[in-house]
Image (tube, rainbow, N blue to C red; front, top):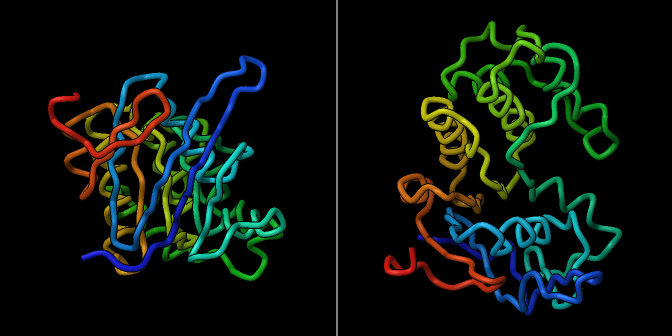
Amino acid sequence: MTGPILLQARALLRRDARAAATLVGPVDFSLCAGERIALTGPSGSGKSVFMRALARLDPIDGGELSWHGRRIERQAITRYRRSVVYVQQRPALIDGTVEENLRYPYTLRVYRDVRFDRERAARLAHAAGKREDFLAKRASDLSGGEGQVVALIRVLQLAPEVLLLDEPTASLDPQSARAVEALVAHWFDADRASRASVWVSHDPAQAERVGNRRLTMRAGTLAAYEEANE
């Protein structure tokens, strides 16, 4: 069962002005509460461009994007990104410990109304198979998989409603990839009635695990996943 529409795009369009080329669209898309969409498609088909547009990290050249039924105005983008979070393949961590990385968002103005909860952070680390002393590790000593776990905990502790996951495990070994999957599943299961995700993956087996709905993108257009297309 899925709930109300959280995020909706109508005729969404992204262009490359320099090349006079259309990168994505026009695309119609909706994401409902309780959905976990796995997005597949060949390299260069526009998946990352589409995800960044949904996150309002890049400008939209046409169409409309709405959140809970309301168009996202420019002045509301910062607040919107608090609820709809883009997670990229390579995490960006600051110097210091894991805990210092997790405390960092609370120094930003948009999160000044909430406080760091160390117990919550430790529970999230545990969901990814990490012990509590993981919070004391130096960021410079982390493996790629551990760095991605930290980046995810940093996001998930803030209780977003939507995760836009752009191949977050593409460069990880299978064990690390499963830890990331477990962490996202823990977040989703904690409040599946109001949360949703879109996960870009090139791994068909992973797409089966992380998605309850599958879409594919080719040449900037979206379609329902069909086995024969892969």
